[in-house]
Image: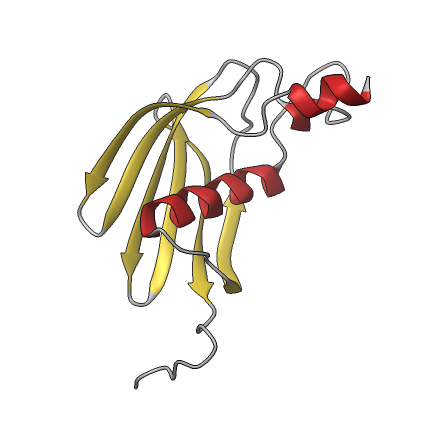
Length: 127
């Protein structure tokens, strides 16, 4: 069983990727056999909120080409659930020194929030 868990996907399938003003947009698909469904929940599997945030940070690192440290998160809200096989959109934009993310599916809000990055060591934040 442990071997089976290692082989299960941990990320959504990227169906489409595009650059948008101040950021990027992804059209994604939740795998039917996502590892994070294990124990969340037995009869009705849903993507955990912490997993959704993990996906945003991973997409952000892919977009920027560097490690992204999180200093804080603001206005994090979850509106609707993500299920196995569901398609959804992720938009991430950089505004006012923060990354604003928004997940939607079929016109419904799934999640949104803001990420403030840590300042890399050896660099001073400019006023």
